[in-house]
Image (cartoon, rainbow, N blue to C red; front, side):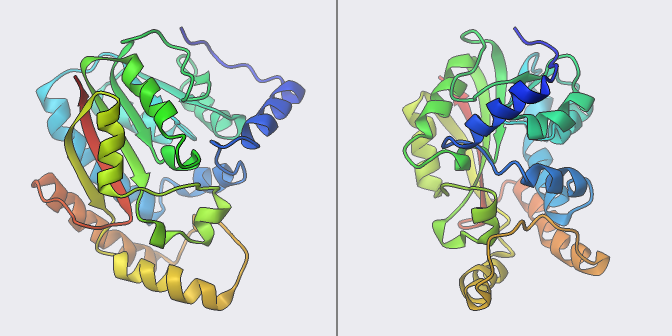
Length: 273
């Protein structure tokens, strides 16, 4: 069903270029930034902590035998999930820029594919995760990958999706990463429900820093008029600690069952009916 990836430089470069020119690919240049920063950068540490607090009770209640990471990027999160929960994870992504890093962490079950056309049989997985991938599909095209998530899920299986939230928060980083859409809670829930996914929980996250984000993205960045650039850049340790603290608090609150009414991200947990 999956195989070890072997890179053929000329052919894979052409393939990636074609994929990137489509409507569902992140800027390949961003993967190097992510690989360099994701272990220490405040946003990755904080959002991982939030995700784990939501997944911990789920993992305690049931065992997942086959888990799909749809849009694995560098594969770092898939490795952390496998280590924490002892899941058998199948990471997939569309381009070589991320897979080049991921193959070092997942040499056996890594696959290159479009998540809107997954190369797996129906009901092949009991858990599907997709972190910040649907935003790279043009608005209106998000049904294609969600339909595939539902198809490869077993009945009763879980779907965990994270997306960027609120169009008002589009930034220079959004443009650089080739983010094509953002979601509201109601629209993300409707998307899941259209494909037979019953929503168990859907909450905003990265909420406490929302006023700072609005000031930066709607006032400061337009004032500077700088070109799009990555926001995944190391900051001074003191600033990193300050920015991480609200996410750490949010993880505690979300773990206790609190849902945020607004935020910079959305997390949905649903079950295939």
